[in-house]
Image 1 (cartoon, rainbow, N blue to C red):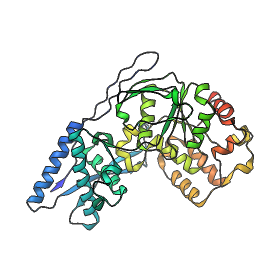
Image 2 (cartoon, one colour):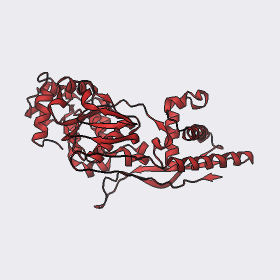
Image 3 (cartoon, helix red, strand yellow):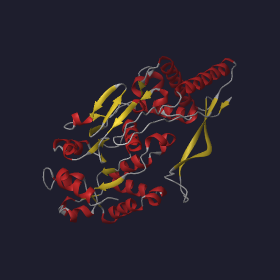
Image 4 (cartoon, rainbow, N blue to C red):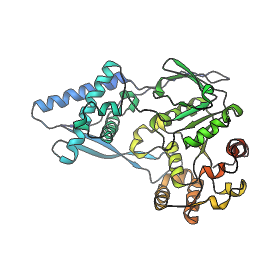
Length: 382
């Protein structure tokens, strides 16, 4: 028997008051419905096996959009009519199907008991079958696509590596968090974003920072005590919790988001991940992407504006060049953010890149006291 994907429902509720924004944000899809669907699915699999039938599972495939219309609003990935069928008969997909079914069994138990587990927790339940965490990641993606649900609705969580500080308070699973108390160090982004409630803030904007070192530099300089803002960092490529939390803050506080990343292909690729998402998790874009983000810096024009010595420009490496070319090949980048695309073209033409630390090197507190306030106040962003 070949199993095709069912449809599930998802609901979002919230309440807003004037002045400070106060939210109740239950964003979890109906886990009970998903639990029932998983239970029925597993039963059918076992029934087929008991009758000597080898089941197969069809998984939808996504692709990057190559054409756009004036009605599109940040449409980047789309589900195709093509299906990838996993069969026990085929050696190439048999192990992937076995892993998927084993993970489904664990998820079913998590939902029944109301517990959560990380990918690594799942991995250590059956090392012989899973072999590596990447196999579990693939299985969870397959399950989410098949059942049309998000990861958190499966009670599978990612360990958060992101940091946040500034003018922000919220309830995290019943515990009140005041991020101003952590403005000298930052506090970890909440893992269970769907449990975050009653967000309050008097911030004027959100500053998204690529690097942890820059985040700590701003913390040491007391940036959040001098500016009404929220500072968030995913410490490089962001994890699911950080992307989801940024989306939640933008959605509920409706503040402008300014991004500070390296002026190199990898810095921009990180920014694109926040703004557009990734093909591997296209199914979860609704809760992970933040479409409205301004690229505050670093830009090549900052060298002249802020007196950054040209010797701080570094040559592009071969991986840099390949990453830049890959970005330019994505049609949605040129369509939605042509000015960003132009910056990448300049990088390739000049063969150089500019890191945040180059601007910060002008003086110890230059980034916090001059560069960032000036860029935001003058509207010098893309």
